Length: 315
Ligand code: PMV
Image (cartoon, rainbow, N blue to C red; front, top):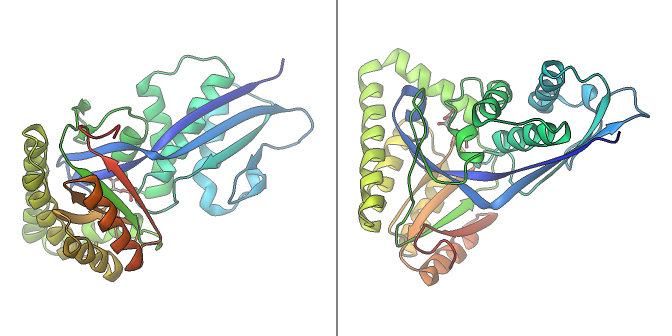
C-alpha cells in the first residue's frame, strides 16, 4: 500500500522573554502564519536510503550535510520508534527564513513529525509531538527552552515558562507588529552559550538582568490584557536595552530598531536568539506599520512582515 503523509507548521515570533526563558523566566511567543513549512512523506521502493528534497539539499538523507543532522536524527528516531523499515522520501517546502529567530528548525521538525504520523495513520498527542521536536531542537540549538517547539506547533499565543504547563492567552491588543529580517544568520547557539558564560563570570549582575527581563515579560502580558500598546512598547524597549547589555544584539539590529522608532514605532526590540535574525516593532495603526516597514527596508532589512495583534489579526 502506498504511504503518503503531510504535515504543516508555522513560523513563530518571540514577543518577549528570549534568553531569560532559558533560566526559568516567562516568555511570550505566537505562531506567525505569514511564514510556514509543509513536509510530505512517501514510501520509496526503488531507493536504498531515505531521500530528502528541499531547497537546501536534494539527495540521500544519510549523506545530507551536517546542518541537517537534526532532520536525519528525527527521521531515524521516528522510524525506529514505530518499527518502520522501508525507505521514505521527505519533501520540505518552507517560507520561514532559516536561522533568523523565526523558529525554522522547530517548525520543520513539527511539520515532519506531523507528516510521519499522518503517513502511518497514527494518533499524535501534543506531548508526543513536543518530545519529537525537542529531540531535533537539542541537536539544532544545544540547550533549547522548548519555547520554539511550543510556539511553532501552537494555534494561539503562548505564555511559556520552562517546565510548566503551557498557558495560552488571547493576544488581543489594538496594535500591529512589524517583523524585519536583517538578512544575517542569527547565532542562537553561540548567544545562549555566551549568556551562560556571563552567568558564570558575573552571576549577580547577569542574574539581575535575567530577572528584569522576566519582570518585563510579566508587564507585557499585563499590557496585552489591558490593551495598552504604549505599556507593551515600553516593556519591549527596556527589554532590548537588557538584551543588548547581554551582548545579544548587533549593529544592524540596533540600526533597524532606531530606524523603526524614528519612523514612528511605539517600541522595538530584537526577537529570538539575536546577533542577526529579526527585530520587531510595534505600531498603533496599519498605515504607520506600513511606513515603518518601508523605512526598515530602506535601512537595510531584507524582508518585512506585518501582523495584526489580535484586534486586527484579520484586518
Ligand atoms: O533564535 P530562536 O528563534 O530559535 O529563539 C531562541 C530563543 C532563546 O530563548 C534564545 C533560546 C531558547 O531555547 O529559548
